[in-house]
Length: 173
Image (cartoon, rainbow, N blue to C red; front, side):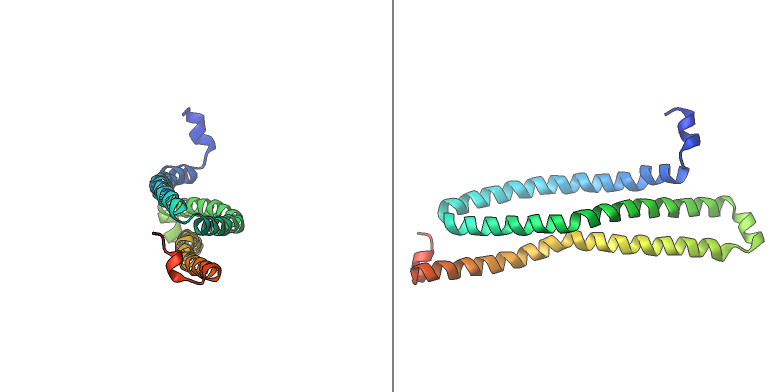
């Protein structure tokens, strides 16, 4: 980058983008690779289930797709907003630290330690709150998916029992 780039851009943002965003990007790539492997495994399992019990698998597949679609619609805007806020707070925290360390003598002489400490603590608290929310949203689908799997399997068993009235007819042979 040309020298002018560094004059016109906030160094706290550059540090944030270099450190924090690179770390998050690495985590995202890792998550993407895990997602690809899990999608491949699910595709194989669903294909086998379609071959064994087409109707039941179709019902479960449609219900899971519907739940996933609704979850995506409900959380997309919140996640995007939290991401932007997290970026801003990370930049503010780095900026506050740079200012504090750069002006430590003046801060000590003027007795402004509390001002910088309060500013840093407030941003850090808000950043931690957003990180907790993002972590909850990231873990929530897994827990809901496990619960829905049990509910949908029980539902399919009851539907099939209502149709056949014989448990042995439901089991694949």
